[in-house]
Image (cartoon, rainbow, N blue to C red; front, side, top):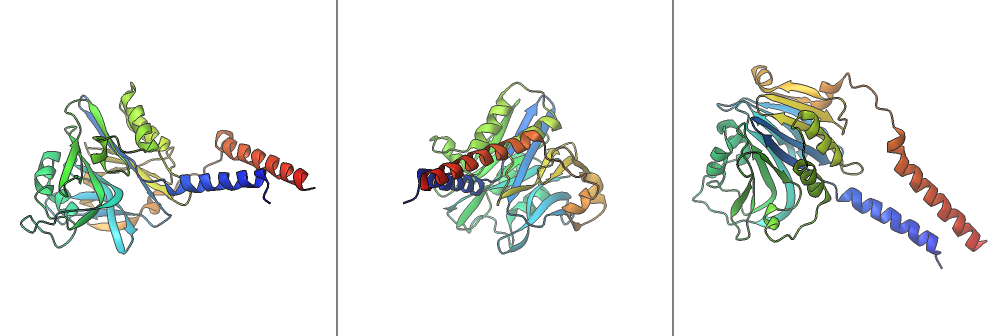
Length: 305
C-alpha cells in the first residue's frame, strides 16, 4: 500500500504539470493621454522564431512569426508603418457561419488588414465583412496610434463580434478564453486577472511598466514564453527573447521596412545577449520544493523501515 507521503508527492508533480500545460499568450493595450502602448507574450513549445518584414501592400509591416501546426510560418504579432498593432490569442475552436457573400481571400485575411488599414475602425469594417471560414480557434487583438483597441472574437450566434476598449484613457486585455465570456463571467484565467489588476492600479505608462506585466504573466516549462514585445505605435518595437526582460532589442519599423522584405531568425538579433545568472529569489521555490520532497522521502523510509 502506498504511503500518504508518496501519494502527496504524486499530487505535487501532477499540479506542477497542469500549471505548465495551462500556460499561454497574454496581450494588452494601455493608453494615457497621448501615450499608447501595446504588448504581448508569445507562449509556445520551444520552436524557431523569425522577424518577418512584409512589403507587399501599400503599408509595410514588421511581424514576429513562428511555425504553427502544419503552417511553415504564421505572423503571431506585429505593427505596420501607420502604428496599427496586432496579436492573436488561441482559444478553443468555435463554429462560424461561413458567408460567401463576404469578401473571401485566398489566404488568411489578417495580413491583408495589416497591409491596408491604419486604424482599428478600418480593421473592424473590413474584418466584419470578410469570410473567416466555418470555424475559428483564435481571437485577434488590434490597437492603433489613437489609443483605440479591439479584440475580434466569435459571438454566441456563430458570427464574429468584438470587445472594444472604452474611448480615452484605459486598457484592454485578452488571454486564452473567448472575450465573449466576459458578459456571463464564465471564465477563469490568472494571467488575465494579473494583467488587468496591474493595469487598473495607479501607474505611469512606460515601456518598462508594460514589460513588468509581460514578466508577471510569462510562462516557463513545456510551454514557455519564447519572445515578447512592447509596441509603441509611434514606430518602435521593444523585443525580448526567452522572458529576458532585462535586455530588449529596439526595432524601428520604418527602418526595418526600408531594408526590404525578408525573414531572419530572432535569435540573431540577440547575439550580444549576456548570460543570465540565477538569483536566490528565483531559486527559492525550487529549494522549498526540494526540502518538502526530502522530508516526504524520510517520512516514507521511516514508515516502511
